[in-house]
Length: 523
Image (cartoon, rainbow, N blue to C red):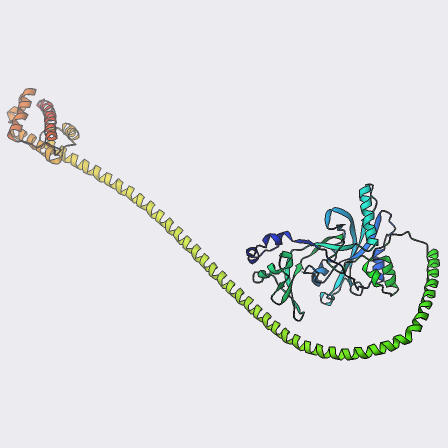
């Protein structure tokens, strides 16, 4: 069953979920329903089965019952066949199954069976579903046998009634104007769910403003019936065989209407039945004649008294008619007010519905805008990630280019230094080795070294070049001579001690290198 937000706010969700099936019991009143011969045909079949006790009763009526549950005629008609083959129990206790329903059929308040093909619009506002059922008798357990016999005795004494059991899947609201008695049904939805808390079924008082409010059950399934002491439906009686016989003879007996069972007595032969009926008729005729004599004696007095009473009644009727006319005018005025109030209520409900739709549309638009913003953010994040990837890729390319440029610069520098050393007199291999060995020297220092070698080369005489190889001491002396003539800053750092150390190291390496190369050249 749908539970609306207003009902949840009112704390009714659990109560509504727990009350999707109902069974009721309340005080019974005499019923003025009349039965016809068709009911006898329906209910008295197979009454001679020794292990079964047959009964028939009104299960439910299309009416507003004393528990403020409204059984709409269309809903009852749609569910009219669902009681068949369902269990019967004691006081709605499913652990006390005592029989089952064998048949059911709809009748009007005059006892006429309604045609199955009747149009819904042609249904009377009030009709009944009659059920035929059996009570199990053949028990071997003494306790169960005693229980069945006790129930049958209570039925025959007229102290047992029936109360239906059913499930339903939803409900609406039945509203009866307490002023003029007008009735209407209001659909249960988000706009009207605030009325649920006023229903007696969920702890309310059964009233709201000027209306008596009931629960109109929807999508009903009848699930069985219970034998109870007090039914909720005043018409839920159990029929008596004598009542049926009287009705078949077009007689009315109010005392028998209140009670009733189908008495499970052995069937007698037709001849015996005719003899019994003949004796009974003669006795009844004699009793009627005696009563007629008594009635005749009192008839004159009763006629005079009746005339006097009729005169008084005529005067009273005139007074009542005047009072009724006055009351009718008041009722019409109240009815007009009620109609205006109902129109105002419908207008407010429509305004509430329009406002709700507007809010839903705004929420839908806001949700759409949010989804669009999230999508835009996602797209921007993706674009940012792609740009970041491209940047990293570009940085890698730039780094590669820088490495290539540095490598090219380094090679160009090496080639220039090699050329200067070759020009200074070294062979290409020796020049390459010198460039590689002294690659860490800055350009100024390296150029100074090359200049010294050029100067040395210029100082050498052709005949000296042809002389045999000079000794290492001579080469070192020559190098020192060059150093004495021109001081070269061979430092690579800013600190004085570091400069002196660097100069000493480079000087030593230059002496070794030049000495070695001069010796090679002399060859």
